[in-house]
Image (cartoon, rainbow over all chains, first blue to last red; front, side):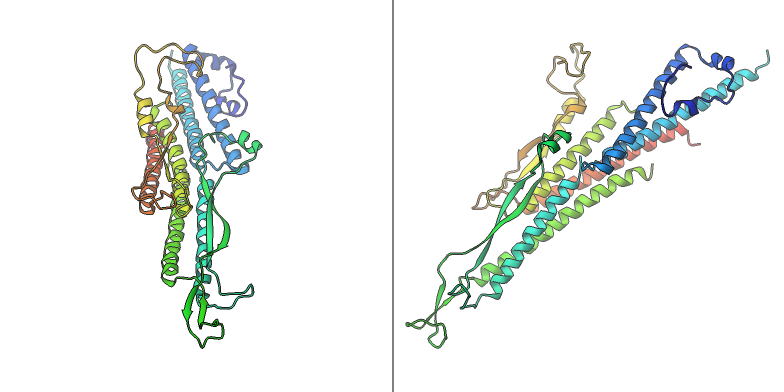
Length: 100
Length: 149
Length: 135
């Protein structure tokens, strides 16, 4: 996958197999695009959460509910993405197990 | 959206009411003081309150985001002045401070008035405390949002 | 995942109630300030209008700043309105704060704020359950 996302992408995308050819099989059209978009979304949420944390700590704007909201969103979107990733991986593994 | 401004407002209210209570207590304590350093009987003290809009520098204005609604108005004691109503004359010829006709100039402090004001200031103080606690409760519940999810 | 209106609605409600808390505490603090006019804030109707604003005949917009042919702002942009809460018994010095009414309003504000937090927590919990499927 050609995604240049900074913080989390490398760790998450490590599909354990590590083999470029096998990655290609999972890389088909809409799934990878959807997943890319999801990753960007997750990244954005993480970024927002970080920004809100810094803001409440160093500025005078103590936006408590705003910060909590951002933290929750970041966590949930991360969970969703990881869950999808897990499903993709297990689907892939199941395909690989098929006797041809 | 921050609760800090609400806290500051309630605190200013408490401080103002406390000043009122102090002043009223002083009035009550001196209700019979016929002799003062500046001459004449004690004169009733009055606390003057004024609203204070949030005074921010231009830089803070630029940095803050949704400040179009400037919602917090604190209160401040802008002065403690003297009640210039005439002293109350009481007929007491034997009193050391009695004048030729035997009248003593007593402080223009009405005990009933002061007691009522005292109770009212006390109640206002408590209302500000309740407001402070309400705000704190809201902030706390926002914090707890992350806990049980 | 967070595009449903309920999140925006709850977030806006929390923001409004925080601002309203400012106004209510200011009223209480200025209960004895001569000439002070008690203020309050309304936003529920504006929020409702913005919620039901999916009308036909909207103009196409490619930028959030474009006008889209209707008068209601999108939910995120709704602003609360400050009003004067006239007390039926103003003081002789022009002060219009009615302490009991303010305390009652503050109790309501606090309750609704806490309720909104609960609802938001509930939303998150539902999503979390859906994502993890209870596992």
